[in-house]
Length: 427
Image (cartoon, rainbow, N blue to C red; front, side):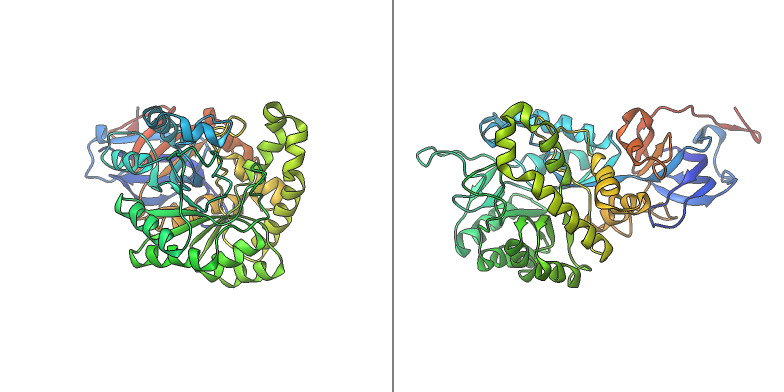
């Protein structure tokens, strides 16, 4: 593997420290080995062994993490579309989505559930170098109660789709054990409802503490983690008390739930998936009609969620991007919209939004010593952006501005000229 020298960039290192102009980053193999202005090329390299990329002030930043990923959700309109799509077609689409994700600047992702073993197979193929995609924590089917928002088929129809229905502690334990046997890195529980499904709305709590705790015990016994869908305040309280690791949404928290989250901020993560709400309000009427969208209560729900995310952010709770992408109105490839929502709707600074996607991303990936910041010794998962996201966070949504994407020191994308050193001159 060639060494690479990124020369004369604006460095946003992911730590939250102030950006630095005129910085070089040297990559040898798959790691960052030097950072600073006017770096020299190590003497052991022949001229053709070092790629020199002149950035002319373009931004150098860490690769981002998408923390609420559904690769097997593909241009779906209804949950039933996910259930009934042939698994072979689901696999093909998920492979495409994995490539789309990394080419969107997200070099890592945390799955929040998938059809069957698709995530697990894709993760393993990416790790073997057979597929292009991000570093990935793989999930299996969602674990959900009978009558939950994913239990949408008539009772006389049996479908093994996006969810496995499990009621009671024993059934939850058995299901979680089976998912880890298949190779999942974490499991997902639907603890609350979701207001697109009338019989199990977001304000409802659908699993008990004992059921959630059973899943956590099984996961933690194996060194694994539990991810939950939890919108209602009671569901969030159950998750915190049961020692859930990652809480999705957390929209409707009351003061007690807020204090519980703050008290446990050093061990858990919140992934609000705001773009699901924003995009549904923007585009959902096209598919369902305005009356149906109004009936979800999402407009009021978004207002509540934004207030609560602002409070959690100010209290130091780690809030990460991840927007439930994969439906027609919330498509794959738009992942960086969450950072825009964090800045424009939640009230984060652009720097803090970047930290949430990079440094916090490495923490949720359990790779903080290897990823998430541009520091000597870390793996070279790096973006070069033609623009400054501190001035305009939306630049990260423009794929044409992502000029270089590196994962493990290898080019995923390179749209810039490469030069080499010849007798102290660059040609």
